[in-house]
Image (cartoon, rainbow, N blue to C red):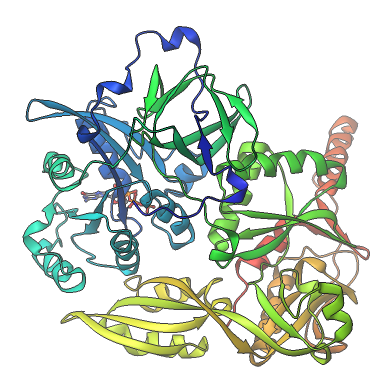
Length: 619
Ligand SMILES: Nc1nc2c(ncn2[C@@H]2O[C@H](COP(=O)(O)OP(=O)(O)OP(=O)(O)O)[C@@H](O)[C@H]2O)c(=O)[nH]1
Protein backbone atom coordinates (compact mmCIF):
# COMPACT_ATOMS: atom_id res chain seq x y z
CA UNK A 1 0.00 0.00 0.00
CA UNK A 2 1.05 3.54 -0.65
CA UNK A 3 2.07 5.32 2.52
CA UNK A 4 1.53 9.04 2.74
CA UNK A 5 3.06 11.13 5.50
CA UNK A 6 1.07 11.00 8.73
CA UNK A 7 -1.01 13.97 9.74
CA UNK A 8 0.59 16.16 12.37
CA UNK A 9 -2.74 16.44 14.17
CA UNK A 10 -3.23 12.73 14.38
CA UNK A 11 -0.26 11.36 16.15
CA UNK A 12 1.36 9.57 13.20
CA UNK A 13 3.65 6.61 13.66
CA UNK A 14 3.56 5.06 17.09
CA UNK A 15 6.38 3.05 18.59
CA UNK A 16 6.76 0.54 20.10
CA UNK A 17 3.05 -0.10 20.55
CA UNK A 18 -0.24 1.63 20.13
CA UNK A 19 -3.51 2.09 21.96
CA UNK A 20 -6.45 0.46 20.30
CA UNK A 21 -9.98 -0.49 21.28
CA UNK A 22 -10.70 -0.79 25.00
CA UNK A 23 -12.49 -3.72 26.66
CA UNK A 24 -13.18 -5.04 30.16
CA UNK A 25 -11.18 -7.98 31.54
CA UNK A 26 -14.30 -10.20 31.52
CA UNK A 27 -14.96 -9.43 27.88
CA UNK A 28 -11.42 -10.30 27.04
CA UNK A 29 -11.69 -13.96 28.15
CA UNK A 30 -11.89 -16.57 25.39
CA UNK A 31 -11.58 -14.05 22.63
CA UNK A 32 -9.61 -14.86 19.49
CA UNK A 33 -5.88 -14.48 19.49
CA UNK A 34 -5.16 -12.77 16.22
CA UNK A 35 -1.82 -14.54 15.92
CA UNK A 36 -3.80 -17.59 14.72
CA UNK A 37 -3.85 -15.95 11.34
CA UNK A 38 -0.75 -16.28 9.24
CA UNK A 39 -0.23 -13.11 7.23
CA UNK A 40 -0.80 -15.02 3.97
CA UNK A 41 -4.39 -15.73 5.07
CA UNK A 42 -5.27 -12.08 5.47
CA UNK A 43 -6.83 -9.81 2.86
CA UNK A 44 -7.39 -6.08 3.27
CA UNK A 45 -9.84 -4.64 0.78
CA UNK A 46 -12.14 -1.75 0.25
CA UNK A 47 -15.42 -1.33 -1.62
CA UNK A 48 -15.48 1.71 -3.89
CA UNK A 49 -18.18 2.92 -6.28
CA UNK A 50 -20.23 5.82 -7.52
CA UNK A 51 -23.00 7.01 -5.17
CA UNK A 52 -25.84 4.50 -4.82
CA UNK A 53 -24.26 1.76 -6.91
CA UNK A 54 -24.66 -0.57 -3.92
CA UNK A 55 -21.51 -0.59 -1.78
CA UNK A 56 -23.28 -0.71 1.56
CA UNK A 57 -25.76 -3.36 0.35
CA UNK A 58 -22.87 -5.52 -0.87
CA UNK A 59 -21.12 -5.02 2.48
CA UNK A 60 -24.30 -6.24 4.25
CA UNK A 61 -24.33 -9.41 2.11
CA UNK A 62 -20.62 -10.06 2.75
CA UNK A 63 -21.19 -9.69 6.49
CA UNK A 64 -24.08 -12.15 6.29
CA UNK A 65 -22.28 -14.69 4.12
CA UNK A 66 -19.36 -14.81 6.53
CA UNK A 67 -21.72 -15.20 9.50
CA UNK A 68 -20.56 -11.86 10.90
CA UNK A 69 -24.18 -10.77 11.23
CA UNK A 70 -27.36 -12.86 11.20
CA UNK A 71 -29.23 -13.24 7.97
CA UNK A 72 -32.41 -11.31 8.75
CA UNK A 73 -34.60 -8.94 6.88
CA UNK A 74 -33.38 -6.15 9.12
CA UNK A 75 -29.84 -5.93 7.80
CA UNK A 76 -29.82 -2.76 5.79
CA UNK A 77 -26.65 -0.74 5.53
CA UNK A 78 -25.31 -2.23 8.78
CA UNK A 79 -22.08 -0.28 8.50
CA UNK A 80 -23.85 3.07 8.16
CA UNK A 81 -23.94 3.63 11.90
CA UNK A 82 -24.39 7.38 12.23
CA UNK A 83 -27.85 8.90 12.56
CA UNK A 84 -27.08 11.29 9.70
CA UNK A 85 -26.14 8.37 7.45
CA UNK A 86 -29.38 6.57 8.17
CA UNK A 87 -31.50 9.69 7.71
CA UNK A 88 -29.87 10.69 4.45
CA UNK A 89 -29.29 7.15 3.21
CA UNK A 90 -25.67 7.92 2.36
CA UNK A 91 -22.35 6.77 3.75
CA UNK A 92 -20.33 9.58 5.30
CA UNK A 93 -17.66 7.73 7.24
CA UNK A 94 -15.60 4.85 5.95
CA UNK A 95 -16.38 1.86 8.16
CA UNK A 96 -14.37 -1.23 8.77
CA UNK A 97 -15.25 -4.80 9.63
CA UNK A 98 -13.21 -7.97 10.05
CA UNK A 99 -14.78 -11.07 8.51
CA UNK A 100 -13.77 -14.68 9.00
CA UNK A 101 -14.33 -16.84 5.93
CA UNK A 102 -13.62 -20.50 5.21
CA UNK A 103 -12.56 -21.31 1.69
CA UNK A 104 -10.74 -24.36 0.28
CA UNK A 105 -10.42 -25.88 3.77
CA UNK A 106 -8.72 -22.79 5.18
CA UNK A 107 -9.96 -19.91 7.30
CA UNK A 108 -9.22 -16.39 6.10
CA UNK A 109 -9.42 -13.04 7.83
CA UNK A 110 -10.89 -10.45 5.49
CA UNK A 111 -10.68 -6.83 6.59
CA UNK A 112 -13.31 -4.86 4.72
CA UNK A 113 -13.75 -1.10 4.43
CA UNK A 114 -17.02 0.35 3.18
CA UNK A 115 -16.40 3.85 1.82
CA UNK A 116 -18.61 6.85 0.99
CA UNK A 117 -19.45 7.53 -2.66
CA UNK A 118 -20.16 11.27 -2.62
CA UNK A 119 -17.29 13.48 -3.84
CA UNK A 120 -17.30 15.50 -0.59
CA UNK A 121 -16.16 12.42 1.26
CA UNK A 122 -13.52 11.19 -1.20
CA UNK A 123 -11.02 12.01 1.54
CA UNK A 124 -12.35 8.96 3.40
CA UNK A 125 -11.84 6.85 0.25
CA UNK A 126 -8.19 7.88 -0.23
CA UNK A 127 -7.46 7.22 3.44
CA UNK A 128 -9.06 3.81 3.25
CA UNK A 129 -7.17 2.74 0.16
CA UNK A 130 -3.80 3.27 1.76
CA UNK A 131 -4.51 0.37 4.12
CA UNK A 132 -5.65 -2.03 1.41
CA UNK A 133 -4.08 -4.28 -1.18
CA UNK A 134 -7.20 -4.46 -3.32
CA UNK A 135 -10.63 -3.02 -4.06
CA UNK A 136 -14.04 -4.15 -5.24
CA UNK A 137 -15.05 -1.59 -7.86
CA UNK A 138 -18.84 -1.77 -7.86
CA UNK A 139 -20.67 -0.53 -10.97
CA UNK A 140 -24.46 -0.38 -11.41
CA UNK A 141 -25.56 -2.68 -14.27
CA UNK A 142 -28.06 -0.13 -15.45
CA UNK A 143 -26.25 3.21 -14.96
CA UNK A 144 -22.83 1.97 -16.01
CA UNK A 145 -19.60 3.86 -15.35
CA UNK A 146 -20.15 7.24 -13.68
CA UNK A 147 -17.82 10.08 -12.70
CA UNK A 148 -17.00 8.75 -9.22
CA UNK A 149 -16.42 5.28 -10.67
CA UNK A 150 -13.64 6.82 -12.78
CA UNK A 151 -12.25 8.95 -9.93
CA UNK A 152 -12.23 6.06 -7.47
CA UNK A 153 -10.73 3.63 -9.98
CA UNK A 154 -7.79 5.98 -10.54
CA UNK A 155 -7.25 6.41 -6.80
CA UNK A 156 -6.96 2.61 -6.54
CA UNK A 157 -4.88 2.34 -9.70
CA UNK A 158 -2.38 4.97 -8.55
CA UNK A 159 -2.07 3.17 -5.23
CA UNK A 160 -1.21 0.03 -7.26
CA UNK A 161 -4.07 -1.99 -5.79
CA UNK A 162 -5.69 -5.05 -7.36
CA UNK A 163 -9.02 -4.00 -8.81
CA UNK A 164 -11.92 -6.50 -8.94
CA UNK A 165 -14.75 -5.11 -11.07
CA UNK A 166 -18.19 -6.05 -9.76
CA UNK A 167 -21.29 -5.34 -11.84
CA UNK A 168 -24.17 -4.99 -9.41
CA UNK A 169 -27.98 -4.86 -9.68
CA UNK A 170 -28.20 -7.47 -12.46
CA UNK A 171 -31.75 -8.14 -11.19
CA UNK A 172 -32.96 -4.77 -12.49
CA UNK A 173 -35.24 -4.83 -15.52
CA UNK A 174 -33.04 -2.45 -17.47
CA UNK A 175 -29.75 -4.04 -16.41
CA UNK A 176 -27.25 -4.45 -19.23
CA UNK A 177 -24.19 -6.11 -17.65
CA UNK A 178 -22.65 -6.88 -21.07
CA UNK A 179 -22.61 -3.19 -22.06
CA UNK A 180 -21.18 -2.21 -18.64
CA UNK A 181 -18.52 -4.91 -18.97
CA UNK A 182 -17.46 -3.39 -22.31
CA UNK A 183 -17.32 0.10 -20.76
CA UNK A 184 -15.05 -1.25 -18.02
CA UNK A 185 -12.79 -2.82 -20.63
CA UNK A 186 -12.64 0.40 -22.67
CA UNK A 187 -12.15 2.91 -19.84
CA UNK A 188 -10.09 0.90 -17.35
CA UNK A 189 -8.44 -1.64 -19.64
CA UNK A 190 -9.69 -4.55 -17.50
CA UNK A 191 -10.86 -7.56 -19.60
CA UNK A 192 -14.64 -7.76 -19.40
CA UNK A 193 -14.41 -11.50 -18.43
CA UNK A 194 -12.92 -10.40 -15.12
CA UNK A 195 -16.15 -8.66 -14.11
CA UNK A 196 -18.24 -10.47 -11.48
CA UNK A 197 -21.94 -10.01 -12.11
CA UNK A 198 -24.07 -9.91 -8.97
CA UNK A 199 -27.22 -8.71 -7.32
CA UNK A 200 -26.26 -7.46 -3.88
CA UNK A 201 -29.91 -7.00 -3.08
CA UNK A 202 -30.86 -10.63 -3.75
CA UNK A 203 -27.48 -12.09 -2.82
CA UNK A 204 -26.98 -13.57 -6.33
CA UNK A 205 -23.37 -14.65 -6.96
CA UNK A 206 -22.02 -12.76 -3.95
CA UNK A 207 -19.96 -15.77 -2.84
CA UNK A 208 -17.83 -15.43 -6.00
CA UNK A 209 -16.92 -11.97 -4.79
CA UNK A 210 -15.44 -13.42 -1.59
CA UNK A 211 -13.55 -16.05 -3.57
CA UNK A 212 -12.15 -13.38 -5.89
CA UNK A 213 -11.01 -11.36 -2.86
CA UNK A 214 -9.00 -14.38 -1.69
CA UNK A 215 -7.68 -15.33 -5.13
CA UNK A 216 -7.03 -11.95 -6.75
CA UNK A 217 -5.94 -9.71 -3.86
CA UNK A 218 -2.49 -10.32 -2.35
CA UNK A 219 -1.96 -10.54 1.42
CA UNK A 220 -0.37 -7.51 3.14
CA UNK A 221 3.40 -7.26 3.43
CA UNK A 222 4.14 -6.94 7.13
CA UNK A 223 7.01 -7.85 9.45
CA UNK A 224 5.90 -9.21 12.76
CA UNK A 225 9.40 -9.72 14.05
CA UNK A 226 10.23 -6.03 13.69
CA UNK A 227 9.61 -3.45 16.40
CA UNK A 228 6.04 -2.32 16.48
CA UNK A 229 4.98 0.29 13.98
CA UNK A 230 1.42 1.49 13.62
CA UNK A 231 -0.60 4.45 12.56
CA UNK A 232 -3.71 6.03 13.99
CA UNK A 233 -6.16 6.35 11.12
CA UNK A 234 -9.33 7.28 12.91
CA UNK A 235 -10.55 8.01 16.38
CA UNK A 236 -13.76 8.61 18.23
CA UNK A 237 -14.67 10.06 21.57
CA UNK A 238 -16.44 7.73 23.94
CA UNK A 239 -17.88 9.45 26.97
CA UNK A 240 -17.00 6.54 29.28
CA UNK A 241 -13.67 5.48 27.79
CA UNK A 242 -12.26 8.73 26.45
CA UNK A 243 -10.48 8.73 23.12
CA UNK A 244 -10.68 5.40 21.31
CA UNK A 245 -8.19 5.14 18.46
CA UNK A 246 -8.45 2.90 15.43
CA UNK A 247 -5.07 1.84 14.17
CA UNK A 248 -3.37 0.12 11.31
CA UNK A 249 -0.63 -2.12 12.59
CA UNK A 250 2.26 -2.52 10.15
CA UNK A 251 5.03 -4.21 12.09
CA UNK A 252 5.34 -5.99 15.42
CA UNK A 253 2.73 -6.95 17.94
CA UNK A 254 0.52 -5.22 20.47
CA UNK A 255 -0.96 -6.44 23.76
CA UNK A 256 -2.77 -5.08 26.73
CA UNK A 257 -0.39 -3.38 29.18
CA UNK A 258 2.16 -2.34 26.52
CA UNK A 259 3.68 1.09 26.96
CA UNK A 260 3.58 3.04 23.76
CA UNK A 261 4.98 6.33 22.55
CA UNK A 262 3.48 8.68 20.01
CA UNK A 263 6.12 9.62 17.48
CA UNK A 264 4.33 12.90 16.97
CA UNK A 265 3.63 14.09 20.52
CA UNK A 266 6.39 12.01 22.19
CA UNK A 267 3.88 11.21 24.93
CA UNK A 268 3.69 7.74 26.50
CA UNK A 269 0.42 5.84 26.82
CA UNK A 270 -0.55 2.47 28.24
CA UNK A 271 -2.60 0.06 26.16
CA UNK A 272 -5.71 -0.84 28.17
CA UNK A 273 -7.31 -3.23 25.74
CA UNK A 274 -7.12 -4.25 22.12
CA UNK A 275 -9.64 -5.66 19.69
CA UNK A 276 -11.05 -5.83 16.21
CA UNK A 277 -14.32 -4.70 14.61
CA UNK A 278 -16.49 -7.71 13.78
CA UNK A 279 -18.42 -5.51 12.84
CA UNK A 280 -18.98 -4.36 16.42
CA UNK A 281 -16.01 -4.15 18.74
CA UNK A 282 -14.64 -7.53 19.69
CA UNK A 283 -11.82 -7.79 22.20
CA UNK A 284 -8.74 -9.86 21.38
CA UNK A 285 -5.71 -10.90 23.40
CA UNK A 286 -3.21 -9.45 21.05
CA UNK A 287 -2.96 -7.61 17.83
CA UNK A 288 -0.24 -8.66 15.49
CA UNK A 289 0.84 -6.74 12.50
CA UNK A 290 -1.85 -7.66 10.03
CA UNK A 291 -3.50 -4.37 9.52
CA UNK A 292 -6.54 -5.42 11.49
CA UNK A 293 -8.75 -2.55 10.63
CA UNK A 294 -7.91 -0.19 7.89
CA UNK A 295 -5.75 2.66 6.99
CA UNK A 296 -3.16 4.96 8.28
CA UNK A 297 -3.22 8.25 6.51
CA UNK A 298 -4.39 11.72 7.30
CA UNK A 299 -3.79 14.36 4.69
CA UNK A 300 -2.04 17.57 5.41
CA UNK A 301 -4.37 20.49 5.16
CA UNK A 302 -2.55 21.94 2.16
CA UNK A 303 -3.19 18.81 0.11
CA UNK A 304 -6.86 19.59 -0.30
CA UNK A 305 -8.93 22.59 -1.18
CA UNK A 306 -11.11 23.34 1.76
CA UNK A 307 -14.24 25.38 2.00
CA UNK A 308 -13.84 27.66 4.98
CA UNK A 309 -16.85 28.63 7.00
CA UNK A 310 -17.08 30.57 10.25
CA UNK A 311 -18.77 28.66 13.07
CA UNK A 312 -19.99 30.56 16.13
CA UNK A 313 -22.09 29.65 19.16
CA UNK A 314 -25.57 31.15 18.98
CA UNK A 315 -25.04 32.37 22.50
CA UNK A 316 -21.50 33.17 23.73
CA UNK A 317 -22.22 31.39 27.03
CA UNK A 318 -22.27 28.19 24.92
CA UNK A 319 -18.68 28.75 23.74
CA UNK A 320 -17.04 26.12 25.97
CA UNK A 321 -19.65 23.46 25.25
CA UNK A 322 -19.32 24.06 21.54
CA UNK A 323 -15.53 23.96 21.76
CA UNK A 324 -15.67 20.56 23.42
CA UNK A 325 -18.23 19.28 20.87
CA UNK A 326 -16.06 20.41 17.94
CA UNK A 327 -12.96 18.83 19.48
CA UNK A 328 -14.73 15.51 19.92
CA UNK A 329 -16.34 15.50 16.50
CA UNK A 330 -13.15 16.42 14.65
CA UNK A 331 -11.52 13.40 16.28
CA UNK A 332 -13.96 11.36 14.22
CA UNK A 333 -13.70 13.50 11.09
CA UNK A 334 -10.10 14.53 10.76
CA UNK A 335 -10.69 16.06 7.32
CA UNK A 336 -12.23 19.10 9.06
CA UNK A 337 -9.64 21.76 9.84
CA UNK A 338 -10.09 24.09 12.80
CA UNK A 339 -8.73 27.60 13.40
CA UNK A 340 -9.85 29.98 16.12
CA UNK A 341 -11.51 33.11 14.80
CA UNK A 342 -13.53 35.98 16.16
CA UNK A 343 -15.89 38.55 14.79
CA UNK A 344 -17.22 41.82 16.17
CA UNK A 345 -20.78 40.78 15.54
CA UNK A 346 -20.62 37.07 16.29
CA UNK A 347 -18.07 36.96 19.12
CA UNK A 348 -15.50 34.20 19.58
CA UNK A 349 -15.75 31.20 17.28
CA UNK A 350 -13.82 29.16 14.75
CA UNK A 351 -13.16 28.95 11.07
CA UNK A 352 -13.64 25.38 9.97
CA UNK A 353 -12.51 23.86 6.67
CA UNK A 354 -14.85 21.47 4.85
CA UNK A 355 -14.54 19.53 1.60
CA UNK A 356 -17.85 20.83 0.25
CA UNK A 357 -21.28 22.05 1.18
CA UNK A 358 -22.68 18.59 1.89
CA UNK A 359 -19.73 17.92 4.16
CA UNK A 360 -20.46 21.20 5.99
CA UNK A 361 -24.14 20.34 6.37
CA UNK A 362 -23.38 16.84 7.61
CA UNK A 363 -20.89 18.20 10.18
CA UNK A 364 -23.47 20.73 11.37
CA UNK A 365 -26.12 18.02 11.61
CA UNK A 366 -23.77 15.75 13.57
CA UNK A 367 -22.97 18.61 16.00
CA UNK A 368 -26.68 18.97 16.64
CA UNK A 369 -27.59 15.30 16.76
CA UNK A 370 -24.60 13.85 18.54
CA UNK A 371 -23.63 16.78 20.78
CA UNK A 372 -26.80 18.87 21.02
CA UNK A 373 -24.80 21.93 19.89
CA UNK A 374 -26.43 24.64 17.81
CA UNK A 375 -24.28 27.00 15.77
CA UNK A 376 -24.24 30.00 13.44
CA UNK A 377 -22.52 29.25 10.13
CA UNK A 378 -21.15 31.93 7.81
CA UNK A 379 -21.12 31.79 3.99
CA UNK A 380 -18.46 29.28 3.04
CA UNK A 381 -15.66 30.58 0.84
CA UNK A 382 -12.97 28.83 -1.14
CA UNK A 383 -9.35 29.59 -0.22
CA UNK A 384 -8.60 32.62 -2.41
CA UNK A 385 -5.09 34.01 -2.47
CA UNK A 386 -3.77 37.54 -2.82
CA UNK A 387 -0.28 38.63 -3.87
CA UNK A 388 0.34 41.72 -1.76
CA UNK A 389 1.90 44.95 -3.00
CA UNK A 390 1.50 47.00 0.17
CA UNK A 391 4.73 46.95 2.20
CA UNK A 392 2.72 47.49 5.35
CA UNK A 393 0.55 44.43 4.75
CA UNK A 394 3.56 42.27 3.76
CA UNK A 395 5.12 43.19 7.08
CA UNK A 396 1.93 42.44 8.95
CA UNK A 397 1.41 39.01 7.34
CA UNK A 398 5.16 38.27 7.12
CA UNK A 399 4.68 37.02 3.56
CA UNK A 400 3.87 38.31 0.11
CA UNK A 401 1.26 35.77 -0.92
CA UNK A 402 -1.53 35.20 1.56
CA UNK A 403 -4.51 32.84 1.65
CA UNK A 404 -7.75 34.59 2.52
CA UNK A 405 -9.76 32.29 4.71
CA UNK A 406 -12.11 34.92 6.13
CA UNK A 407 -13.80 37.19 3.55
CA UNK A 408 -13.95 39.94 6.16
CA UNK A 409 -10.14 40.15 5.83
CA UNK A 410 -10.13 40.41 2.03
CA UNK A 411 -7.41 42.99 1.19
CA UNK A 412 -8.37 45.97 -0.96
CA UNK A 413 -7.39 45.99 -4.67
CA UNK A 414 -5.09 48.98 -4.04
CA UNK A 415 -2.96 46.78 -1.79
CA UNK A 416 -2.51 43.76 -4.05
CA UNK A 417 -0.78 42.89 -7.33
CA UNK A 418 -3.25 40.11 -8.13
CA UNK A 419 -5.87 37.81 -6.67
CA UNK A 420 -5.82 34.06 -7.32
CA UNK A 421 -8.62 31.51 -7.17
CA UNK A 422 -8.43 27.70 -6.83
CA UNK A 423 -9.31 25.64 -9.90
CA UNK A 424 -10.27 21.98 -10.29
CA UNK A 425 -10.25 19.47 -13.12
CA UNK A 426 -13.84 18.25 -13.38
CA UNK A 427 -15.09 15.07 -15.07
CA UNK A 428 -18.67 14.88 -16.34
CA UNK A 429 -20.07 11.63 -17.69
CA UNK A 430 -23.37 11.93 -19.52
CA UNK A 431 -25.63 10.33 -22.12
CA UNK A 432 -24.70 12.09 -25.40
CA UNK A 433 -28.12 13.74 -25.83
CA UNK A 434 -27.38 16.18 -22.95
CA UNK A 435 -23.89 17.16 -24.15
CA UNK A 436 -24.93 20.51 -25.65
CA UNK A 437 -26.81 21.70 -22.56
CA UNK A 438 -23.99 20.59 -20.28
CA UNK A 439 -21.41 22.45 -22.34
CA UNK A 440 -23.52 25.62 -22.00
CA UNK A 441 -23.72 25.12 -18.24
CA UNK A 442 -19.95 24.66 -17.99
CA UNK A 443 -19.33 27.79 -20.02
CA UNK A 444 -21.66 29.80 -17.80
CA UNK A 445 -19.49 28.62 -14.90
CA UNK A 446 -16.35 30.07 -16.52
CA UNK A 447 -15.03 26.58 -17.26
CA UNK A 448 -12.51 25.71 -20.00
CA UNK A 449 -12.94 22.47 -21.91
CA UNK A 450 -9.91 20.17 -21.81
CA UNK A 451 -11.04 16.89 -23.28
CA UNK A 452 -13.95 14.84 -24.64
CA UNK A 453 -14.04 11.02 -25.02
CA UNK A 454 -16.76 8.55 -25.88
CA UNK A 455 -17.15 5.71 -23.36
CA UNK A 456 -19.53 3.90 -25.70
CA UNK A 457 -21.82 4.91 -28.57
CA UNK A 458 -24.18 6.86 -26.31
CA UNK A 459 -22.08 8.03 -23.40
CA UNK A 460 -19.49 10.77 -23.33
CA UNK A 461 -16.86 11.86 -20.78
CA UNK A 462 -16.08 15.61 -20.67
CA UNK A 463 -13.14 17.19 -18.85
CA UNK A 464 -13.26 20.84 -17.85
CA UNK A 465 -11.10 23.18 -15.80
CA UNK A 466 -13.48 24.91 -13.36
CA UNK A 467 -12.96 27.69 -10.85
CA UNK A 468 -13.74 25.82 -7.61
CA UNK A 469 -16.08 28.58 -6.47
CA UNK A 470 -18.32 27.97 -9.48
CA UNK A 471 -19.04 24.34 -8.76
CA UNK A 472 -19.17 23.58 -5.10
CA UNK A 473 -22.46 25.18 -4.16
CA UNK A 474 -24.99 24.09 -6.74
CA UNK A 475 -23.27 22.98 -9.93
CA UNK A 476 -24.10 19.39 -9.19
CA UNK A 477 -27.81 20.13 -8.73
CA UNK A 478 -27.96 22.07 -12.00
CA UNK A 479 -26.16 19.30 -13.83
CA UNK A 480 -28.54 16.70 -12.45
CA UNK A 481 -31.64 18.67 -13.32
CA UNK A 482 -30.67 19.47 -16.90
CA UNK A 483 -29.70 15.85 -17.59
CA UNK A 484 -32.79 14.36 -15.88
CA UNK A 485 -30.45 12.91 -13.27
CA UNK A 486 -28.28 11.00 -15.76
CA UNK A 487 -25.05 13.02 -15.73
CA UNK A 488 -22.49 12.49 -13.00
CA UNK A 489 -19.64 14.68 -11.80
CA UNK A 490 -16.36 14.44 -9.94
CA UNK A 491 -13.31 16.69 -9.61
CA UNK A 492 -9.72 16.91 -8.44
CA UNK A 493 -7.56 19.87 -7.40
CA UNK A 494 -5.68 21.65 -10.19
CA UNK A 495 -3.88 24.61 -8.60
CA UNK A 496 -4.62 28.34 -8.83
CA UNK A 497 -5.35 30.91 -11.55
CA UNK A 498 -5.53 34.72 -11.63
CA UNK A 499 -9.03 36.06 -10.98
CA UNK A 500 -10.83 39.38 -10.84
CA UNK A 501 -12.31 39.21 -7.34
CA UNK A 502 -14.22 41.64 -5.15
CA UNK A 503 -15.70 41.60 -1.68
CA UNK A 504 -19.48 41.88 -1.40
CA UNK A 505 -21.41 42.89 1.73
CA UNK A 506 -25.03 42.11 2.49
CA UNK A 507 -26.83 44.71 4.61
CA UNK A 508 -30.05 44.76 6.59
CA UNK A 509 -31.28 48.31 7.17
CA UNK A 510 -27.73 49.52 6.63
CA UNK A 511 -26.05 47.01 9.00
CA UNK A 512 -23.59 44.54 7.53
CA UNK A 513 -24.56 40.87 8.06
CA UNK A 514 -21.26 39.25 8.97
CA UNK A 515 -22.51 35.75 8.17
CA UNK A 516 -23.06 36.69 4.54
CA UNK A 517 -19.96 38.71 3.64
CA UNK A 518 -18.56 36.99 0.58
CA UNK A 519 -15.92 37.21 -2.14
CA UNK A 520 -17.20 37.00 -5.72
CA UNK A 521 -15.91 37.21 -9.25
CA UNK A 522 -16.57 40.73 -10.58
CA UNK A 523 -18.56 39.38 -13.54
CA UNK A 524 -20.91 37.57 -11.18
CA UNK A 525 -21.32 40.22 -8.49
CA UNK A 526 -24.68 41.55 -9.65
CA UNK A 527 -26.36 38.17 -10.20
CA UNK A 528 -25.05 36.70 -6.96
CA UNK A 529 -25.94 39.85 -4.97
CA UNK A 530 -29.42 40.03 -6.41
CA UNK A 531 -30.11 36.41 -5.76
CA UNK A 532 -28.86 36.51 -2.13
CA UNK A 533 -31.12 39.53 -1.50
CA UNK A 534 -34.11 37.73 -3.01
CA UNK A 535 -33.50 34.59 -1.01
CA UNK A 536 -32.91 36.52 2.19
CA UNK A 537 -36.13 38.40 1.63
CA UNK A 538 -37.99 35.10 1.24
CA UNK A 539 -36.54 33.55 4.35
CA UNK A 540 -36.66 36.54 6.75
CA UNK A 541 -39.70 36.63 8.98
CA UNK A 542 -41.56 39.93 8.76
CA UNK A 543 -41.06 42.30 11.65
CA UNK A 544 -42.91 45.31 13.04
CA UNK A 545 -41.06 47.57 10.61
CA UNK A 546 -39.85 47.49 7.04
CA UNK A 547 -36.43 45.94 6.29
CA UNK A 548 -34.15 46.96 3.42
CA UNK A 549 -32.05 44.02 2.19
CA UNK A 550 -29.07 45.25 0.14
CA UNK A 551 -25.98 43.87 -1.57
CA UNK A 552 -23.08 46.33 -1.78
CA UNK A 553 -19.56 46.54 -3.16
CA UNK A 554 -17.82 49.03 -0.88
CA UNK A 555 -20.29 51.89 -0.59
CA UNK A 556 -22.04 51.08 -3.88
CA UNK A 557 -25.37 49.26 -3.52
CA UNK A 558 -25.84 46.80 -6.41
CA UNK A 559 -29.10 45.07 -5.44
CA UNK A 560 -32.02 45.72 -3.11
CA UNK A 561 -35.17 43.99 -1.84
CA UNK A 562 -37.66 45.06 0.81
CA UNK A 563 -39.34 42.98 3.50
CA UNK A 564 -42.70 44.56 4.40
CA UNK A 565 -43.71 45.24 8.01
CA UNK A 566 -45.95 42.80 9.82
CA UNK A 567 -47.07 42.19 13.39
CA UNK A 568 -47.04 38.70 14.81
CA UNK A 569 -49.09 38.10 17.89
CA UNK A 570 -48.21 34.82 19.58
CA UNK A 571 -51.24 35.12 21.83
CA UNK A 572 -53.63 35.37 18.92
CA UNK A 573 -54.67 31.73 19.16
CA UNK A 574 -55.21 32.02 22.93
CA UNK A 575 -58.74 33.21 23.11
CA UNK A 576 -60.22 32.97 26.57
CA UNK A 577 -58.29 33.76 29.68
CA UNK A 578 -56.08 30.74 30.31
CA UNK A 579 -53.22 32.57 31.96
CA UNK A 580 -50.92 29.53 32.40
CA UNK A 581 -51.16 28.75 28.70
CA UNK A 582 -50.32 32.37 27.87
CA UNK A 583 -47.35 32.28 30.22
CA UNK A 584 -46.12 29.07 28.61
CA UNK A 585 -46.33 30.57 25.14
CA UNK A 586 -44.50 33.72 26.19
CA UNK A 587 -41.81 31.63 27.90
CA UNK A 588 -41.37 29.52 24.80
CA UNK A 589 -41.08 32.67 22.74
CA UNK A 590 -38.40 34.00 25.12
CA UNK A 591 -36.43 30.75 24.82
CA UNK A 592 -36.77 30.89 21.06
CA UNK A 593 -35.33 34.40 21.15
CA UNK A 594 -32.06 33.03 22.50
CA UNK A 595 -31.75 31.23 19.17
CA UNK A 596 -32.26 34.43 17.21
CA UNK A 597 -29.52 36.56 15.78
CA UNK A 598 -29.98 40.30 16.23
CA UNK A 599 -28.68 42.61 13.54
CA UNK A 600 -29.43 46.21 14.46
CA UNK A 601 -32.97 45.81 15.77
CA UNK A 602 -33.80 42.96 13.38
CA UNK A 603 -34.27 39.48 14.80
CA UNK A 604 -33.35 36.64 12.49
CA UNK A 605 -33.80 32.91 13.16
CA UNK A 606 -30.72 30.80 12.50
CA UNK A 607 -32.36 28.69 9.82
CA UNK A 608 -32.97 31.81 7.69
CA UNK A 609 -29.22 32.06 7.11
CA UNK A 610 -28.86 28.36 6.45
CA UNK A 611 -31.59 28.63 3.81
CA UNK A 612 -29.70 31.44 2.09
CA UNK A 613 -26.36 29.62 2.29
CA UNK A 614 -27.80 26.38 1.04
CA UNK A 615 -29.45 27.81 -2.01
CA UNK A 616 -26.92 30.50 -2.79
CA UNK A 617 -26.72 30.39 -6.57
CA UNK A 618 -23.60 31.13 -8.44
CA UNK A 619 -24.90 31.58 -11.91
N1 LIG B 1 -32.39 -3.79 -7.55
C1 LIG B 1 -31.28 -3.71 -6.83
N2 LIG B 1 -31.08 -2.68 -6.00
C2 LIG B 1 -29.93 -2.62 -5.30
C3 LIG B 1 -28.93 -3.61 -5.39
N3 LIG B 1 -27.91 -3.25 -4.59
C4 LIG B 1 -28.25 -2.11 -3.99
N4 LIG B 1 -29.47 -1.71 -4.40
C5 LIG B 1 -30.22 -0.50 -3.99
O1 LIG B 1 -29.52 0.66 -4.41
C6 LIG B 1 -29.64 1.69 -3.44
C7 LIG B 1 -28.26 2.18 -3.01
O2 LIG B 1 -27.59 1.14 -2.33
P1 LIG B 1 -26.45 1.42 -1.24
O3 LIG B 1 -25.91 0.08 -0.86
O4 LIG B 1 -26.91 2.32 -0.17
O5 LIG B 1 -25.43 2.21 -2.15
P2 LIG B 1 -24.05 2.87 -1.74
O6 LIG B 1 -23.18 2.72 -2.92
O7 LIG B 1 -23.56 2.28 -0.46
O8 LIG B 1 -24.45 4.37 -1.51
P3 LIG B 1 -23.54 5.52 -0.79
O9 LIG B 1 -22.99 4.91 0.44
O10 LIG B 1 -24.49 6.61 -0.48
O11 LIG B 1 -22.53 5.91 -1.75
C8 LIG B 1 -30.45 1.12 -2.29
O12 LIG B 1 -31.79 1.51 -2.46
C9 LIG B 1 -30.30 -0.39 -2.48
O13 LIG B 1 -31.41 -1.11 -1.96
C10 LIG B 1 -29.17 -4.72 -6.29
O14 LIG B 1 -28.38 -5.63 -6.45
N5 LIG B 1 -30.35 -4.69 -6.98
